[in-house]
Length: 307
Image (tube, rainbow, N blue to C red):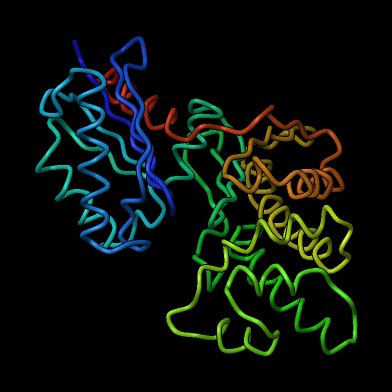
């Protein structure tokens, strides 16, 4: 009997799933093991916690694993990939398949078929699978260069919008809860806090933006609207590529969503869909949000079935 380990490495958490060919046997969530988001000691502690808890829950030794599939952002960055290969190689048996986090989410949605996946959590990315099975992506260049619609961008753009509102003499509800979150007293103190090096975790402000938008704050609502439009735009780029490769004028690929922002922030998801439907009125979205780790599990099992 084969055992398969699927791992979804997020920016704030890591999900481990152990399964055989037919059923999920155990699932554990720990802190992140992504080396771009945490130090080596914390990452190793979170990894050990996850593997140990999984072995205890299932009774399966990690040395008995047939194949592991890990999905992670930064899968082209040596700091991330070298650490994962070394750590899992020491502790887990069998083969290791290492792919991007957006790819496993795409697998969870479409199981190898053409389609488009929009991901927005701490960061963001868009990927599509072409009719020939290859992948095409847009965005995903990190918090400084991209991450449209992500928690990071929502928090950062909220601060920018707050200071523009100050200059314009506009009222906004954003100031008080952001000051409280950062344990500050005056708006002017946000200048030093927001510009410090290393930078603060702007993604933690995204919940404040959503709360203020729900209370009717025009500045917060505009931040969410702009981020939804920006994420939809890179989604459109990927959809256009799939349509051009397919060749059928009337065909529009289905879209799926994943990530905490698109799961929990309704205005973001609705805004993305509304923007996409301006260009593609017949587009269909898969219900709910995808569980990326299930794509990693599908890929681990698939690799076995191909041999």
